Amino acid sequence: MERQGDAPSDDIPLVLAREGQHGPVVHAANRTARLNGIHMGARIVDMRAICPELQVHYADPAGDRAALDRLVLWARRWCPWTVRDCDDGLILDTTGSDHLMGGESAMLVEMETQLAMLGLSAQLAVAPTWGAAWALARFGPVRSVCDADQIDIRLGPLPVAGLRLDAETLLLLRRLGLRTIGALLQVPRLALTRRFVKAGLAANPLLRLDQALGKLAEPVSSVEAPPRFRVQSRLAEPIFDPAPYLPALCEDLCAALAQAGQGCRRLHLTVYRTDGDVSHITVATSATTRDPAHLHSLFRDKLDRLNPGFGFDLITLDAAGVEEMQAVQNRLEGGADEDLQLIRLVDRLSAKFGPRAVTRPVLHESHVPERAERQVAALAAVPDAGVAVARERPLRLFDHPEEIRVLYAVPEGPPAQFVWRRQTHRVARYAGPERIAPEWWTDRPGTRLRDYFKVEDQTGRRIWIYREGLHGDGRGGDPRWFVHGCFG
Image (cartoon, rainbow, N blue to C red):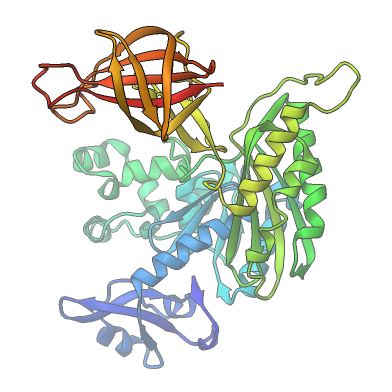
């Protein structure tokens, strides 16, 4: 692939150079240069002797890889399985996708048109195998479609370099007079097996032949699994605001989810710009849903973040976090469930202010009261903590226990009187103690145990207090008393 922009015409031989051991060598060449005898790895000075009008520019391998990585995502407009092929091309698994664009030939025309709009020229090929497509795209016609029963015929005239072999193997094959794939196919397999039995993949022409002919599997392994539920909108003309298309996309996606008895926890909106850039917006829900109106509302304050550039020509919507979801009637008279309204409120607030702005308490496996729960994002899926504690706990637990001044204490029991918040409380009745020892794997050495009491003062107010430490425990002075919460 060659970035055109201010590049010379395709009729001019052009190469990209990189530094070699004995000066600059050819890193990449356009089709015109290859037709003039320019080949990869050759010295620039030698190639200028062959082709005096050769134009040379220095390559930027790191920039090329970054551009290809962006192009991998952009190419998913045609199919969900796209990967970068080495450092000079893309591989797309279009199985089941070509019929959506009128067949393989029409799909190649569409690809070439879209790439040309980005200022990119490309050689395209469709074949049943990765290896055959790789060879035809680099050494075959500009656009070629190869059927399964034509692979050996179409690959026969191509050079052995189309088998993705290393330089030493290619040199050896040329010395043996095997310059084309067809000539290699005529050689008895046993003779090649003896010579290349211990060679690796890039040095074994037999393995590469088997891959190209479909005898050895070489699946396209994408960086991520394709979404199970996806809808898209292809636009005849570029647009600058995808908002008008979102309601219909959400309706179609939720209809597909409902038909499968599924719901989702996340939605990924992807917009493809005409200049090759791809933008993403992700929204999440606190519960599994397939309500199109609610899901559409979560994008309301996020679309302004998109940079339209020269416009969008493709919009896709993917469902993630897909879970089984059964249809449940909320109320007998058909009204809305209040819990459902709360879930939607949490989703809208999280979408507006960020996924960590709204939190909820969840159980945490600890006997220490202030550690028995923790705050997590409302949108996070948290598994059950597995804590089975049946003891009564106060409705209101203070973030920080408040120390009290004891006026008179019952031996091995709670204070008979204590001062808390400048008021004197007389204990009328109590229950306890409940002893909670320090957690040695969490607490610092020297942490003292606690004895908790539920006490009721003279006014009937129930308070949860504890004594920190014991006399003579060797971990400090006299025990200290604290109020940790209130019942009611």
